[in-house]
Image 1 (cartoon, rainbow, N blue to C red):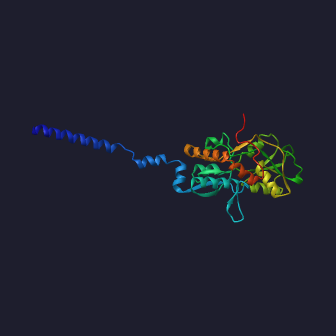
Image 2: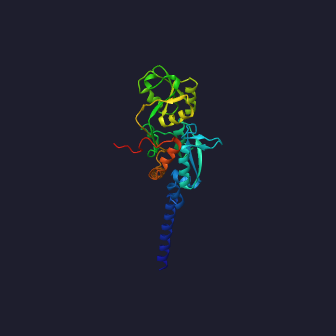
Image 3: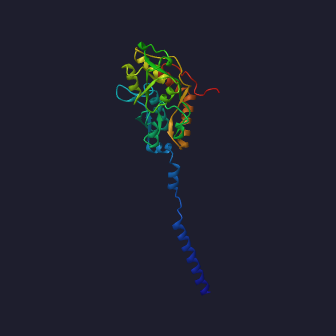
Length: 279
């Protein structure tokens, strides 16, 4: 009987030793580690941080600009404020340019971009877009004294575009001999038109219409140079949870007409084009 007990103890020793060895070489995830993986979405990061960082072009009134007190304001800023309010977090508006919209998303300097971000297949290779929240076509901003009525009058003249935008490619697709001059911001491009350094600026018609109301010497051509452009929020690629949340936010503010109300507040008119076209 004593021999049997000894054998049992030896067997038990080897079983325990084997289990210890197995546990030493096998990583077992803990609830904390699992939570970290599940919380990798920007949505969870924003909620835990307590601050929403929105990239917005603050030289693109009335979408984004600095008010007389130096605070961010505009249509996109109002939308950002509403998003932060519904999330229960503070808002940090990060001044962004057309050229650094995508890099700022890829390096996580911002959580989302509201900045005249037109959806297209080339950009969709590296970032993701929500459903549209505003629609526009494109036209030219010119001095009334220029005599320019249409892009057809732009032969051998200079047109101002913004670096990082799609406008340069759109001008080239018109197959008209036009010199393209790029500027760092929309305001710089507008100033070039005012000072005669460029004959026109190409941009979204709703933006240009607002700019023309600020200067009686400027006007906007009555044309649609490209097919309708559907602008959206941009987010880092691969973050489906954050994308889903933002799409639901947009659905809610469109269904409640809040988005249309904010558009009318800043542009003085109802949205011209539907967000969901009939195919």
